[in-house]
Image (spheres, rainbow, N blue to C red):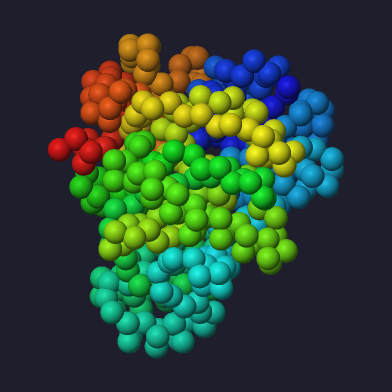
Length: 421
C-alpha cells in the first residue's frame, strides 16, 4: 500500500515509524514531515492546510490511504474533500471534528447527552460573559471557542483576571476568530489522564491510557505548551476506569453525535480529570494526541495499517488490537524560550550516541545545509524509551537524553516522576 501522512510533528513521525514496520507498506510519504520522517519516508513540502494540492498529490502518487495528523486540516474539511474525490482517508469529517474545533459545540453535546464534565455556559457577547463571571467562584476557566494552538484556555485566579481574559478573547481577539464565542467553566481539580479510542462510527476500541505534561517547567510551573512529555500507563487509571469511561463518556459521545446525524470515524481523544475520584471530561480532540501518541504507539503490537483500514472500511469489529505490557516514557526537548519567542537553525548533536532501544521522534527539525539535523520549531524532539516498569523506562530516557544537545535546549526533569516516588 502507498500511504500519505499529513503533518510535520512528532505525532506524525510516530505514526510514520509504526506504519513503516507494516509488511503491507509499499511507499510512505509525509507532508511536510521533518528530519526524522525523512529517514523512513519521503517528505513532501506541502502545508497540512493546502488541501487541494495534497489531494492532487495523493492522486498523482496513487496513495491508497491518507492519514490526517493535525486538527486544523480536519476542521477545514480535508476528510470531506478527499472522500468526495474518491480517496480513502483516516480522520473525522469537518462537522464531526467540531468536537474539538468548537468548545461550544463540544459542551452542547456533553450537556445534552449527560456526559460527565464541568459545569459551564457559553457566551457570544462579552458584557454578558463579564456579568456572569462576577458571580462565580474563583478560580474559574475561560476557554476560547475555536482552535487556538493549545493556548485558548485561561485559568483565572481572580475575578479581575477572568474579566481581562474575556476582554482579550472577545474584544481584543488575541486568538482571532477562535474568540467569537467562549465558554466559562468551573475549575476542576484532580489527576489528568488521556484516553484515546479508535472508532468506525459504530465499533469503539480504546487505546492504552497516557498522561501528558502541559506546563513548560518542572512541578507544573510556567506557561502551557503543546506538551512537554508523557508516559503510559498511569498506575491510577486501571481497567475498571477504562471500562467506566468507555461506558459513561466515549460511547455516549459517539452515539450522541450519531443522534445528531454525525458519523464519527477516526480517533476520539478524551482528556479527563479525576475530580473527586470520578472521571470528568476536560476536552475532546478529534485526532491522535501529541505527546501522548509518542508513548502509546510504541506499545501497539497490532499493525496500525490494519486498524486504520478497518476504521475507514467500517469493519473495526473484526480487528483484535493487542498492546505490549511494557511501560513507555517520552520526554520533549524544546527550544529555549518556547512557548514564547525562540530561535531555530541550531545544529543537533548526539543523536548517534544513544542506546539502540531509545526512539527519538522528531518534531521541529529539518536537514541543514551541511546535511546535519537542525532545530526548526518550539518542540524539537521527543525522546522515548520502553521498560518493564515506568521506573525502568524513565531512567533509560534520562540516562540518554543528556547525550543530545542543541543551543539553549530545554526539557523537564520530572516526567513520570510521580509514578516512582
